[in-house]
Length: 128
Image (cartoon, rainbow, N blue to C red):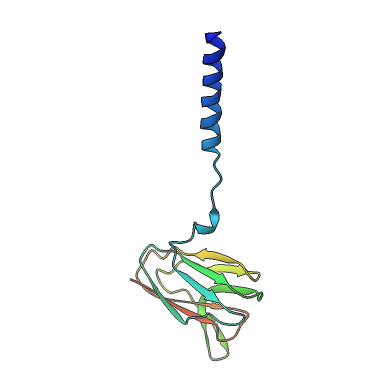
């Protein structure tokens, strides 16, 4: 009888460890500590952001508009693709109402990204 009780306790302990290891993680707050910039239908809602060296930047598309974000900027009505020295390569597509991080920005400096779809949609990223 004690063997059955001991076996039951051991089995219960094993299942407890198994369920604890398979815990559900709320991914909604995983990017909570990453600086964020919101995008509207045809613009960044802020034109510049300052982040710390080593940070990633979460770009959040608040509209249903798609965005194709890459290194460079709009100068007037002309796209100027360019990657500043030390900037991470950024090629990120958003389909609308979504978000994704870019980076990490491992060097200090001032970097520029833009949306290839929307003229004038520029963001300056200052890394300190």
